[in-house]
Image (tube, rainbow over all chains, first blue to last red; front, top):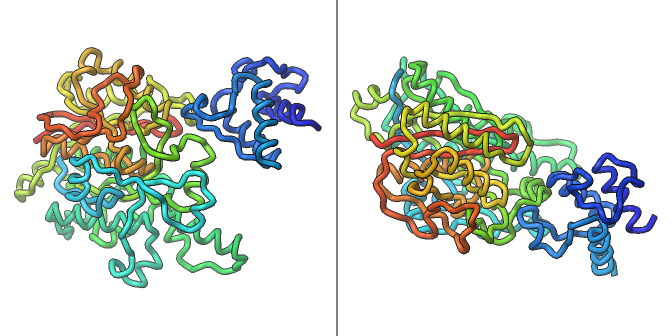
Length: 86
Length: 402
């Protein structure tokens, strides 16, 4: 399973949706994921890829991790994996 | 209904090991938050806190006591000793039979859990000390206070996360007010600054890595503290009859539940608790000169709390002062309302308003007089102390000058 599919699987599980219902341009709000759901998703992604995601719920924009939609989250994770797993 | 006054106060926290040193630090706007020092701190991403330094159990407690006193109990007993000494009360006879201890803590003996899990899981030991359970139980601190000072009336421990000590003090207040007890020892204590305690908080991603800056636009989260605040709540007539020094009056309280979310605060729940405390104390909103805010320094709390204050106080919200001393001593979780009550006493008795330190940038969503960075002299008659907990459980106390 590639990175994008795994991330979508985690997000879909959090949103209680089928993976086919999660589109790359969906925002977390579109998917019904609130701040607590986001923190839980980030934890699941960190566990799945054994990476550390810089994210402070007080100021999501402060951290270098773009959560504006599914696509940006996937891109951010690809970048973190490249940085942390090499 | 009996009037209730505070006749003794004691504390151990990151700012000081007693009340005078704590109040001096608050007046000077000193920060007690710094690098954490305990085993495995290097494995934490959050490495700062309002840790109590230089408070050694050795020498203060004997070997038998140390085997029974978790750090949260050690803090409690030291603070209780100070408070009861100041009150000048000796509990015997009928006074002892009716007076009790109601304390707040969210986690109880977290260090004891942590140390013993480490022994059995990490070190593979199959045996733990026989007193692990009586040491870690949430009511251990209240029990030891009752034993140490011969308090034989109603005693228990309240756990409502960050509102624990306010709920506890509200309950103690109620018992004295209705005439059930002539005096109650109350307040709270917390000691979660250990690897497991901080690791658990890290998970929520609401902790700051650098500082607690309540109400400041660049705030980026809460910082944990530890310690205890303990008070003697006494029947006014009882205190007067024996010529006790009165620090201030506890005038009213209210509790409310958001009934919405397990972590996100609600403006409505906070507002109902503040308005309820005013009504219970029979004071008008415009009599309130100072609010000791819950003011955690998180994005969510501070803007919600300020909006709730604006709702309750209307135009008077712009005239009152509101500060968060968590910027100095950190968030003591279940003990926080108790240590923060010291700032309320200082406001009423000494006419000094503790500042919100670390304040750097105004936030339009927190556009109140937060007493930025420097303490202020002000004559106030009525103050509120806010506590809004995870789980949506709120408790607000109203206090008055005597």
